[in-house]
Length: 209
Image (cartoon, rainbow, N blue to C red; front, top):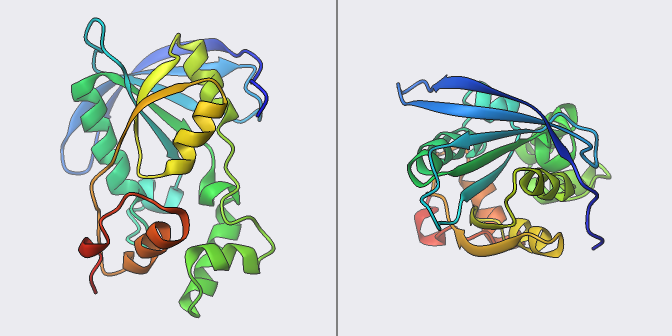
């Protein structure tokens, strides 16, 4: 994979965050010039990285249904909440990437949900629509990290593809740190598919029901 061109920090602003359960955090939010895909991705700096330490980084793909509306069909909202707290404690960045539906967009994601209701899993539903199982490209994420002066990270993710793509793009992933298992009656098939189809590091023994 070719190395991405450079991006630069466009602006930075502090935003206080409050989650529905009352958890609060302070984020310094960065915008960028020159991102490869032209999308309006954000980087949220949380906590303080100890001297000589490695930042904890989460690449979080935008999920309107989960992040905003609290949908139980995925684990995105709980992962976002968990990530902000863990990164605030360790010091690092949450990259909020505009990649709704693993890169297929909101309307297509909802169309895929309808196919899942008829029995397809989350990946087969995408391909039935003529779309990729996972259309995400993390070139912009690597550019953002480089613009922030970060070339080595601990990656907060269950997804091995994120680590592999970042490594190919010149970001050293020292450790991949799994998130918790955010299980509900509505997302168990979705989580099981992520383990069985794309090797996510989620304990299958927890996926009951």
